[in-house]
Amino acid sequence: MYITRTTILRLSAALSIMSFDAQAQEPNAYQLFDPVVSVLQSPRCMNCHQSARPTQKDSMIAHIQNVVRGTAGLGAPTMQCIACHQEKNTADGKVPGARGWHMPPLPMVWEGLTSAQICHQMQDPKRNGNRKTPEEVIEHMRTDPLVLWAWDPGTGRSTPSITHDQFIERLELWAKAGMPCPDEQAAAR
Image (cartoon, rainbow, N blue to C red; front, side, top):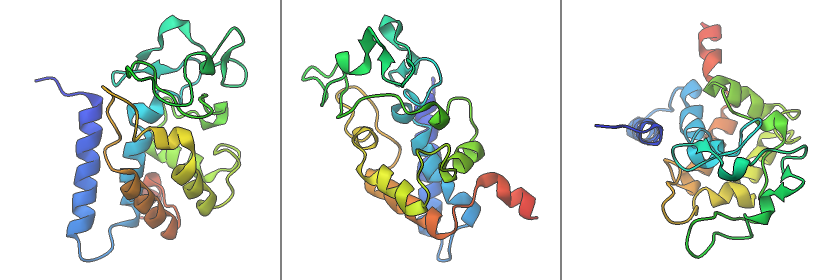
């Protein structure tokens, strides 16, 4: 039996949600980031949160046509992301699209980072798109067309392991708890 990374992330997120819902008391604050990072580390997010080249598909293979980041995260000057990625998914489902398709700025790259490193990055305005408050981080995740696209990626693409509403709910719980990161629990002992 072949188990994909996506399947593992979905199971991990589902178990996190079930354990939170099954508990009468508050979950361990350090676990609040688990369902959030399960979304952030899904192929829908990770395919673009790369340093040099985007990846594609659930298997996260190198993007075809030798696509590269370019200096502004928009692709090479002669082949920008929006040359193929339009305002919405193509009718045949082959080319995904959303308004303003681009790669995130380099400080927002998650490639090769642990969940704790991503957690700290999300709190750092220098590495999170200059979002200074938890509310600004949540608003970005609630309204940005590229974030929302992850839950409407077109035919043949998986969605994150939890719904967008659950994702926002988990972000809000994490923010309310003070945005604790997984590695801080060991340091607090």
